[in-house]
Length: 281
Image (spheres, rainbow, N blue to C red):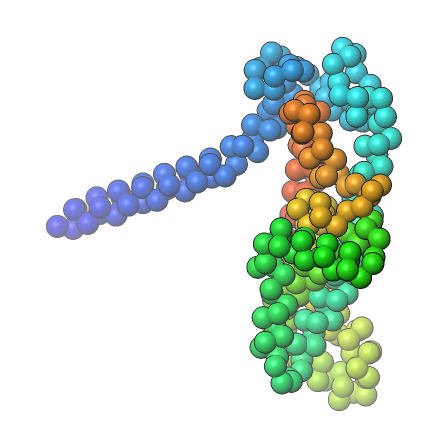
């Protein structure tokens, strides 16, 4: 009887391990294929492997190829690619910075003070994370057009701040939940004002969460496509929109190389953010 239970437990463990392995394969196999085929020398059909090459990465950084098979958007005007990268970083840095200030201040206020409708307000803060991107994008477009605001980088930044603040709020709130308020009370007892207490006691303790929230907001803003598509104006194209426009001409080999670079950068930034968020106070 005992042997049967042991055999059944081993069988269930094997099944769960196999399921976990298949789930990881299903999740990461497409990303692995993008990395592999970004080195494919075939300039026409990326699904057919013809050899190994670094030419597509050279096209992105140098802007010229040796075989003349590169897309004109990369070769004839490489400054266009640099321009959209600049726009993306400008939007991501600006939106993440503003969202970090708003999200951090809101998290501190809701953590330290009680007021009427606090629970309802917390639910509203989480709403931008739950609303589908296409719905939020259409709502922002209607708002900007109705208010007579010209679409451009400014509207993209405002639109990103509306939902990035929620992400920062959640991360900083989680950090605040694990902090003992005794030090803040001791600071007040010793004569420090609220601003001094925040600057010298509270902020150093929540700084990993603040930095982690900023990095997460930065990477989400950098990768956003749907909302940016609705609220971007003429001359305010970002890198994801640039890739989307290039894909309408077909899956070019340079796109796979550019996708790998974005993936690598996103993983680095997201890893730093998660590491800082999970650090103990």
